[in-house]
Length: 73
Figure 1 (cartoon, rainbow, N blue to C red):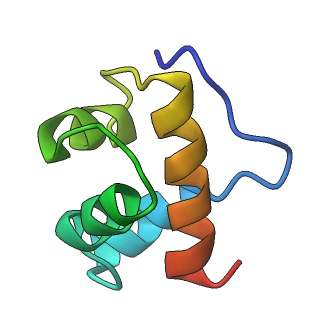
Figure 2 (figure 1 turned 135 degrees about the vertical axis):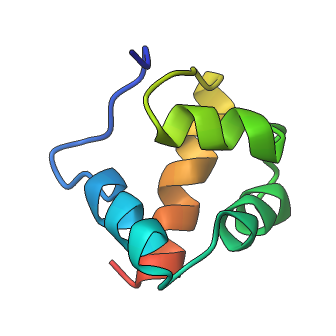
């Protein structure tokens, strides 16, 4: 289980749903994260999104920002 948790306004469930529906792709999310200064590779990000990996504190914050940007939350 990931060691970091999103805030009460957690965009992660919506991101997971958007990934499943094809609204956004993992590649889109990963590129957004890299563009914001994230260091995680796509494999690590995918594992985290499936609940079987962890992210550094920096990558966790970057993912939260990328989620909000990608989903307009």
